[in-house]
Length: 180
Image 1 (cartoon, rainbow, N blue to C red):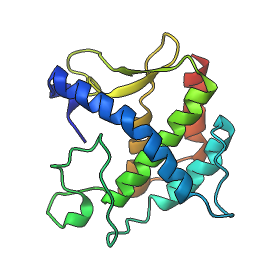
Image 2 (cartoon, rainbow, N blue to C red; image 1 turned 180 degrees about the vertical axis):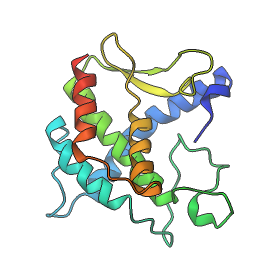
Image 3 (spheres, rainbow, N blue to C red; image 1 turned 135 degrees about the vertical axis):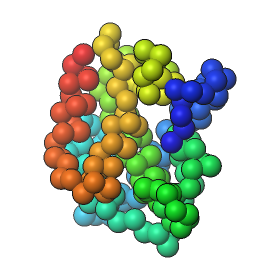
Image 4 (tube, rainbow, N blue to C red; image 1 turned 90 degrees about the horizontal axis):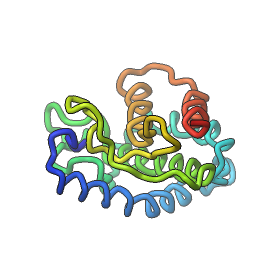
């Protein structure tokens, strides 16, 4: 991932704009990916998140190293992905990163549909906060919601650390943020 905490203002603004431009295409790719009759229904609602998240948590465990995909704009392309074979690379393949990107774009779509007043912001916190410079969704007056960071963390817990991630955890976080 990009180190936005130590990036220049110009680079942070560039990454922010690239992230926003990528949301629509990621949402479209996710709809194609989940187009089979047995896949969860994508209706852009908060209610759909549990079924979609259960699907995501199953699929993120499948690295598919033989396949490749373009890395999302929030991933630093100079950081090798798992399929590169370079020691210390990863933890995810480019296809897993694409899946994370598509999933977070869907969650963002559901959230902005539920709260049309939500807006994308560049996070600015304490100077030592690693989240500085990240694009987050501002809902109300509280802490912005780190859509991408939350989905990336969920994927890390499930895939890398092999921990069980409660399916409802994501929708509970989203509902709490939307209430704020």
